[in-house]
Image 1 (cartoon, rainbow, N blue to C red):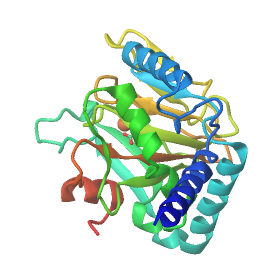
Image 2: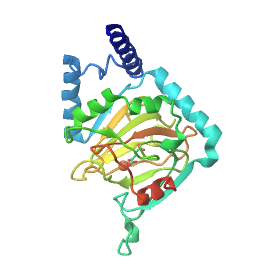
Image 3: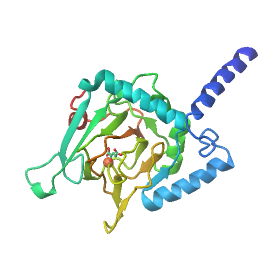
Image 4: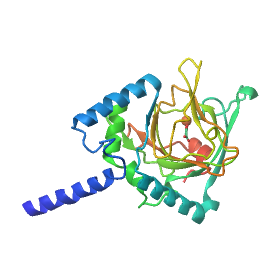
Length: 268
Ligand SMILES: O=C(O)CCC(=O)C(=O)O
Ligand SMILES: [Fe+2]
């Protein structure tokens, strides 16, 4: 019995250890929630998130993890590109609003990108491992401190998805429903002023342009309070690629059919 228990613990520890090696665990000791280093990281991260609405953790993924994930994505792109959804959305500043007859045409923006939905990402994918890795969920819970618990979404399409911004793609100014989104930066464009994440400060006086963002970083952003956008990719042959990880305070979170149709072009 003792033997079985200790071998179960060994297997469990080795799975956890393998997962924490996917990220730069020396810089970000998410696996060691009791440590002083972890608590210092929470204090610093929370301060950045609360004061600016944007927490940026550079070099979050190891170079190897990022390149393996990009290989996974390239194989999805070559094997199923005709099944991927090229989303084109017209929207007001609130991305999720149904446009009403009263909407002034000048207020309408448009956005376009290619999306790889959750059900198109393989079950063995490293992205899925990172998405459901409990230390990451605990870390986000500890930084945000709005909800006692966060859970991976149950949505078959929107739980975890990949955005690809190619030439002429962009995401116009908008705010989100959710208090936060988690964004893994996987590839930046080859042009320093294209496919850039920008947001407005609270009183909309200033636009912050995050030209410092690099592939491999993790971003936690308060998209409900701060209007944000991705600038157009014009000349870059290299698309901007990023993954959105959706967590919610309810364990049974799903997107509405309206949102699914709008963003994924289908409901299942
Ligand atoms: O693709 C991005 O980096 C931003 C995504 C975003 O703002 C959104 O999906 O609401
Ligand atoms: Fe957004």
